[in-house]
Image 1: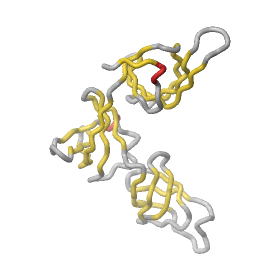
Image 2 (image 1 turned 180 degrees about the vertical axis):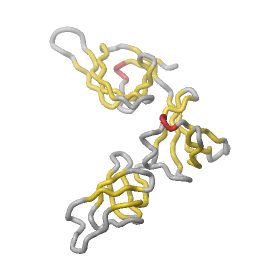
Image 3 (image 1 turned 180 degrees about the horizontal axis):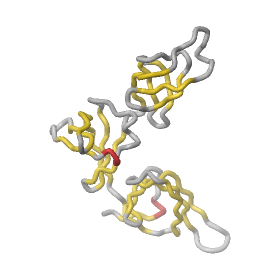
Image 4 (image 1 turned 45 degrees about the vertical axis):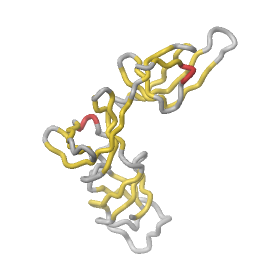
Length: 187
């Protein structure tokens, strides 16, 4: 494994600290007037999703975690998890639901996603930045309501609840931002 110093920190870099895999969200080198320099960082645990602030002394060395990402296609859900297929080798991989709970609101059959792995352990999946989802149920639109009016909740076929404009009806297809779960536009 590669050893990395705090001087080489970059946003998005993955490191191994206290037997956990962390992605650096942000960091700041601090040189106080008195005492030694240190690095204040905000890290996200890739296994649990927890975000934590950690401070390292300047020049501290730690292990860099080699994260692999493979493009796979989501096939179906079975009793033990969610089944994905490698597009090149046609190998299938079953991922437990607790590893990908954040992405389940956006996951649809035949969707291509990136499976994120560390030493053959699946850490999670990355879905595209936007997805097209169908509205399962929402309040009916009322004549006179416009796009700039307000918003109402709409439940998507995946179970995700999104705030949408009043003119959106059931069975409409919408473009949804997967980073924050917000409505972008009609598809």
